Image (tube, rainbow, N blue to C red; front, side, top):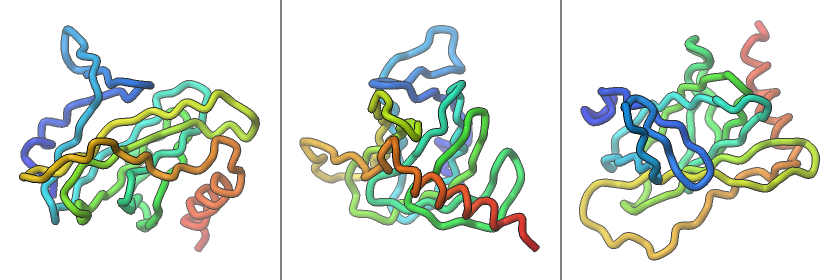
Length: 163
């Protein structure tokens, strides 16, 4: 179930170093923070709006369950990361089941070849009283040349269509 704060379906574009809030007349550049309540499950739609690059996406210390692709329900895929192609959308469940704190959400390109190693981040932060860490650890995303991780995720998607 989505929290009331998520019900408004705000739209954000995550770009290196900041986030642009899309659905306002004056875009705000800042680090996006998704506030969650411990024990609840959230259903964000991840959209790859990059023109030419497949992207790895991960949330530090959290598992993802992919339940939809491009508006269609699929057999759930439990995974630590996703690889999403240009123009694709993925609906993923994220259970807020870790110690209340702040965790990076991160994305980087999969290029298959040597490429600029740029990681884009946002923050998943738990509501409530806790001492926020002085530094956040990045999730252990697959390397931008990690063909095995790219192939593994793609094969898991392809297996969904076999009868």
